[in-house]
Image 1 (cartoon, helix red, strand yellow):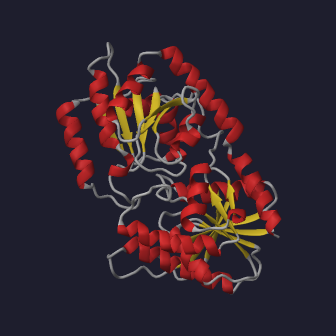
Image 2 (cartoon, rainbow, N blue to C red; image 1 turned 180 degrees about the vertical axis):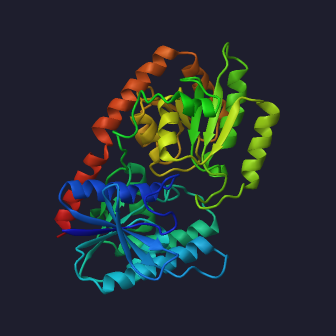
Length: 396
């Protein structure tokens, strides 16, 4: 059985400073190969003229040459469509793939428009906005495109029950086509007890003396809610604690610019929370796992989410979670077991939950132990890859 897992083409494989879809592709390829499946990742090569094949960290990657677009308008969308077209052409000239598994809307659409029935087509929906009732025009257009892709697929992978219902009810995908297989986490890479004092010292941090956020610094992630809640909480604490915000300052992982939103947040933090908030920008994975492992907790105050990997990474690192009730977050956080939930968009409720956790170390430690245990039992990539392997087999 030969499987092609197709990336977005936007973030080079393997990802080093973020990219959930890209991590998903690489981890599945690595673990499927360990099960004896001939799996490869397909990525874009924007600076070359020939196909390049390389193996990095047990992941075989086929890089297809694609000529970069000359315009900047909707550049990422155009790049995805161009990459998808290149993948379609590559697959047309190859007859040895049994299954092609796509993961992003516009690459997936390009492939769905040119499906070669010598292989079966699988699509994983990572789009967090499908469960939402009210969306902007741009998302309505994406829903038309992604809906077509999912209906054309032989199997659609939903990451949780919330996404499963939305895909069936809103995208019109036949129920028998949709399966639920969550994201996974590398439980050997992300784990408790990773003490690297020099990394913590670089950011002026101490073990279990900071609250952590990991993700893109965009309005949809609700970072502004976290800053407001944190301001209220620290005024009531009898000890000093910091907030660490990790992630790129723009919507794109490939951009080095700082968005207006990020600038406003940093200005607010400087004025209202002097010296208590650390913005690290994007960090590589070796630094990230140290920051997870030594944090007091992770907070994810998003307005929309599908199945955020940062929650799984934090759980595997043995720290408790605080998350909003948005999207698939409640499918991961069991309130009072591995973390605490707060009402989406309610920074006062977030402040209350954060205060509860910061003032109760016994509760914190109980949630942390449970988080690690759940990560091991439900979300290791070995378990996830094995489930998908069986679904692939059923398609043959």
